[in-house]
Image (cartoon, rainbow, N blue to C red; front, side):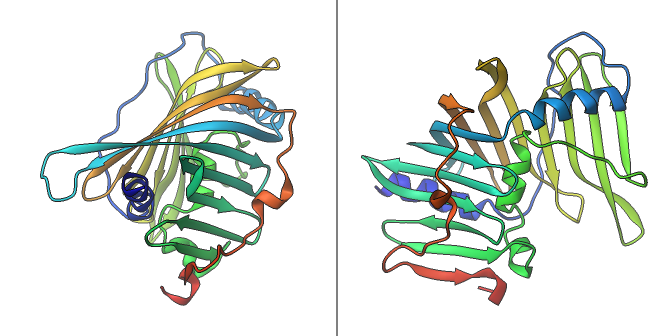
Length: 273
């Protein structure tokens, strides 16, 4: 249980700041000629996926406490449930017992860890607490690459054609400067997203998510292996492997209901906790 607790705690710890080096993935070769055609292909694919039911294997590699330079790996089994547009639940368990839950619905998101701390960090969607976790659950949902991308007419966005990928950079204006908030790499052959970088308001990268492997599920290609790198004072790596993926099995709506576990301490981030 101690290792599972540490893995859960790092999920809270990495929701912070910082940036690391980035690199461009190399896949595909066939050109999609324009941003409009690329986004049309992506959005048609994203719109075909309404919900996800999946088993999950979660691996966290992080610096070992008290040992400079050493890293330690923690493994958990669990599930990933998604119901668009707002519902997500990622749970990790050890010996059949839940130890970590990351959840979100239209009103609220939360991170719950036990056994020793048995604490829930939570905030309202769109409330002040959502940015106190600089990487919120909605950011994690975005990094899965399953959502359509609609650019407003006046959107600040750049498009770059690389030999094996197309890169879309979406920016926002902060203090008179254009600051990126999301950069997405697309496979030029298929139009599928293969990497998503997210940035905070100070132009620092907070997450690099690589979509490493796609598999056909009922004729629809779905990413089943993700590798995420969180950049804080030290790098933390997370690998999410999906299996038994179902797109035709809607998750139970009760999974996405915010319920405080018995005896858990609640830290409401909207109140500054």
